[in-house]
Image 1 (cartoon, rainbow, N blue to C red):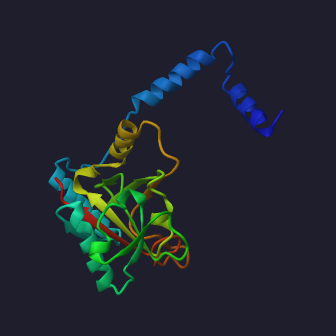
Image 2 (cartoon, helix red, strand yellow):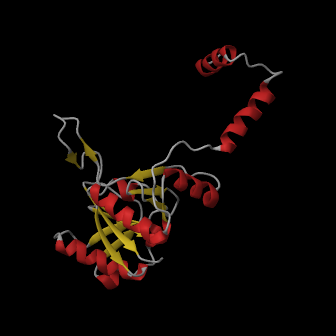
Image 3 (cartoon, rainbow, N blue to C red):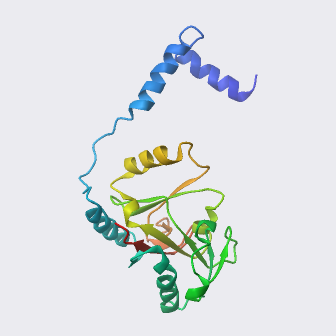
Length: 220
């Protein structure tokens, strides 16, 4: 018997689970998962423009910076301005899902691939954004490698205003509805990486990007 079988056997014994009642137990578990009852939630507006305003407020509180453009085609130029203002290189690794954007026209040398340790700027889209906490939800896929948001010092994300949902529960419901099977990785990003381990002093960039810039696409 393997360690796994031993542990699961002990759990089954404590639950008094056997072949006779396993079907009933499995049905009870599936019913509980299907119900997905929500606990108490804070009041968050549900009107789209109000959600965008709440997301702006909360993401700024999380130390992100934020810009707005009318359409996604305006994003490369806005990102080029941001990089120039901060004297950052006009070189970036971008999620392959964004490869068709006119990066060259904006003066950005973009490589559509997963990030490497030498990449300083990573540009991604997002699956959705959460107004309650100013959080991005990124779902990995072949054209959305997770490394683009995790390895570079500066992470820039495109955030369609139409994809801002009230809370975490709504983000998971959207993922179940649109994706069916969950991806290999789901990452929630609330501003730059940070830690307060040393003398309870917040330090940005401890375990990932120390700069997060959001470009909201006003597509409501």
